[in-house]
Image 1 (cartoon, rainbow, N blue to C red):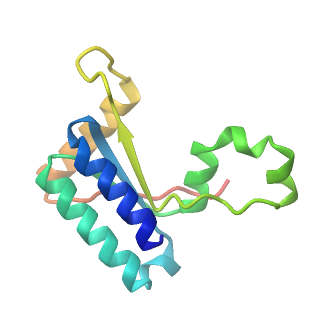
Image 2 (tube, rainbow, N blue to C red):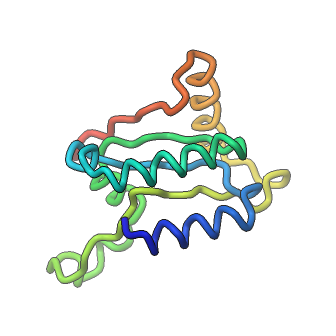
Length: 131
């Protein structure tokens, strides 16, 4: 994650944090040793906590990319390895019409985050296995 990418995400979240309902922070073991990325994560977590945005850590950014970007796997360029995979270290999930639209899966995730906070686990971790 570059400073520019972080700043762009930070500007988006600062403009309208009311629509952000979940922040996914994805990092693998190599990323845990990246001091700059950990500083970014700390700043993002502080902002999310201050604005009541649920946070979830994901242990496998590659697998997260596979799950979120299924349509890009079908493209010929992706299969040839021509494209660099997108940086998904921080994914913001928004819900623009929170009173009108309820997604059961998102509701379950938010419930999981809330229950984790009750057990003093402020940033729960989901371990995504390889396929």
